[in-house]
Image 1 (cartoon, rainbow, N blue to C red):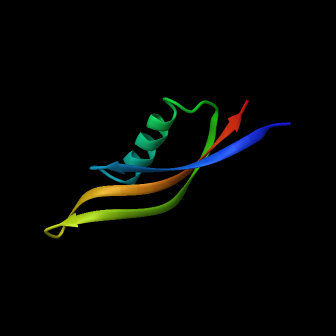
Image 2: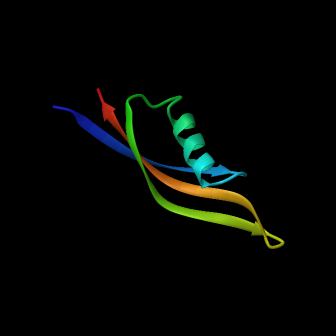
Length: 66
């Protein structure tokens, strides 16, 4: 039997949502082992003078414990 745990992380990028997701998973995997899936819970952008300057994603990351 496996036990899974889910954590929520926030990741940002200056190039797009895909990059924000990749950066978040990459950074989480530095300290969390056995990541199996991620779900984009929410996404938003920061706008400055009519231009998008930052893309942000809230991720739910699931990993196997033990």
